[in-house]
Image (cartoon, rainbow, N blue to C red; front, side, top):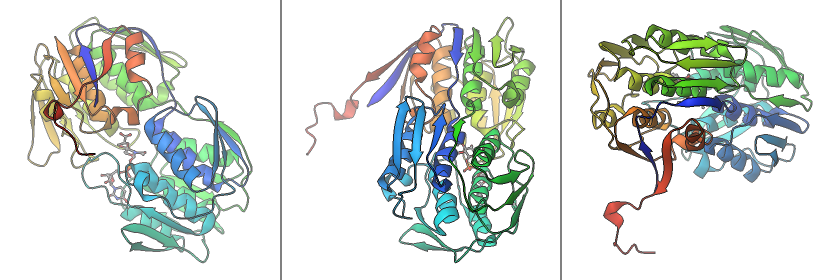
Length: 432
Ligand code: EPZ
């Protein structure tokens, strides 16, 4: 099994370039199913969730070609099924976007229950509410979601609470429906705006993306386009926190500073210097890290996908910090791993609030990544710690971070990918 071996205590220094946004790209790729002509996506990150999405679509008949490592050609006109293959689809949350795009184009979809990081219960009731509002019928057949509609007619959709995935799927299902759809209580994340811009560049009529009311007038035809994915604000935030945790001096380039505002504000609160330039941010430390309070919220609040990374920084801050996870019900599973490194963190019974007592330094240990962002947090912990840290289950990390070990080595980190057999399997004759 591949692991990262990290010798910590080295301040990160230099410049790192941010890749395309995972949570935008997985939606943009699914959205090509709605396009009536070939189209091209640029700045697509080379990460496993993206590869899986493209493999699923190829297996369904799409013609997908890499023009270069981050530019992809899509011709989905020959997709010959509305059934998404089970194996890959149940490994990631993004497969839920095939519900909205297949329904939007074919008026039918057959998609396994989506998987994704284990962050607690992750139902899709609001997605189904949106599909039903537009005229689709939903049921479960052999463990998969089945949607069918004689026709899709625009309607008002009011979400019970803000949800990124359901907002995306409501847009996908409405973009070719008859008449006007109004989505209220919509998510406002940058990747929602990115998807709306992509579809509008094909001739869709979507207004208000980025606000809590999105209006969509259905169109019949979507023409080909070339479109570049926005930079990944969570990848950028992860490197900002890594720079702070190692008391480094790093320029994070190819970003949209406005997308990082809540992360920048929190880092400054902790005494970290952050200078915003046109398409980069400069992060450096010249004073002890101070405690703070974090409460994860929907955009533009502090992003839940930065919670594990920031909590790791707070383990070596001066004083006691409070971290409240308000989006997912089980996003502190990594705390047990940080405790192996000496962190002093207690989590309340409901798994919603962590109290972090700052310590002088973390100490290297063997730890296990429980999910994508927690895996990134453990890498940050290893970079900041004294001694050697081994992080396993790094396939989680590679779902969302392009070349993370290479990018960190270029910043001076001592991190290497090694293949260490499972000790308990050494010498055991495995049946073939
Ligand atoms: C997207 O997940 C992201 N994934 C997540 O990023 C991110 O944490 C999340 O949005 C919040 O920003 C992708 O974009 C592929 P939600 P999603 O629908 O769409 C509940 C990462 O690390 N909910 O906004 O699943 C849900 O259980 C990943 O990149 C319902 O109850 O998030 C959660 O508690 C992790 N019913 C909350 O709402 C529904 O129908 C927010 O979920 C939908 C959601």
